[in-house]
Amino acid sequence: MTGPFDAITPVPGPAARDKAAAVLQGRRERQQRAAQTRRRSLLDAAWVLMNEVGPHALNMRDLGARAGYTAGALYSYFPSRDHLIAELRQRLLDSLTARVERVVRPGKKAALPDSAASSMARDAFEHGTLAWWQALATQPNALALLLTEPAAVSPEGDGADLLVKLAGATRACAQALEDAGLGNEAAARLHGQVICFGLGMLVAHAASLGSAAGRKVVALRFAEMVRLWRSAAVGNDNGVTEPLDGSAAVQVDLFGQ
Image (cartoon, rainbow, N blue to C red; front, top):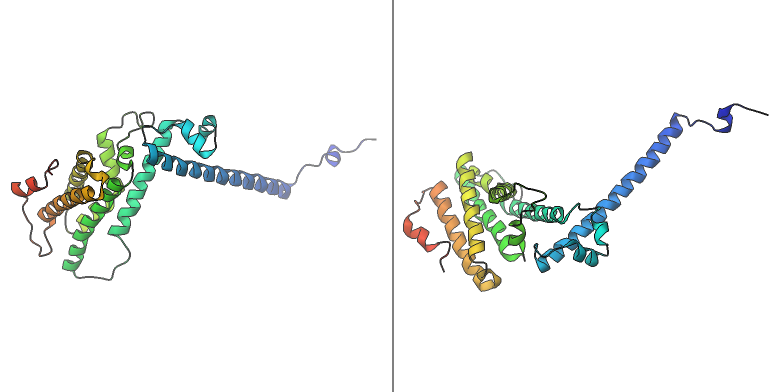
């Protein structure tokens, strides 16, 4: 006895096919969310380990032991150690962005007179600048991570690339200068100058940053230089610009004590 093939093996109709596709899509989305959760967990473990041993000593074997994965399994989440370092570096830059944004733009403000708004913008530039600098000065191995350029991820990366990324991460500081009346190019130039000086201070005085007292001395010197440059560019609270003379520069010399 024979019968139509469709009666033996029915062909799913449109509704059944749509339902099966929805089930499959839901399964894939759950798997992706689970993979993303595991990946974030691995990044968290890598962040803690990096702060303990430094970016140069961080390796996949130790991370696997810390997180409960084999080194081979880690490569399904990060193609190489350099990719892992690059992700940690981006996490640091993102944290600097969030920190600066909280300081420079704490929330909506009521309308203010131009003079008051300009004064607040000048203060916001200083406070935002000190926010990212203090973060690098106080977080273990943060500066070393920032200065680590993963060759496999950015084969042509160099110091200029670092400055561009840090300037982008702290863009709110440059915006504060513009809000204070400085032109776009001048604001970017001053912001870049401050970033270079700030990184130089961190490197030159790395030994002093290990203690709270030493950190305070270096931070005060950096803050003074930022204030001098800001006053020379957009004026003080009285709207008067203060030319940066040689004696002022010597007082906050990069290698001064």
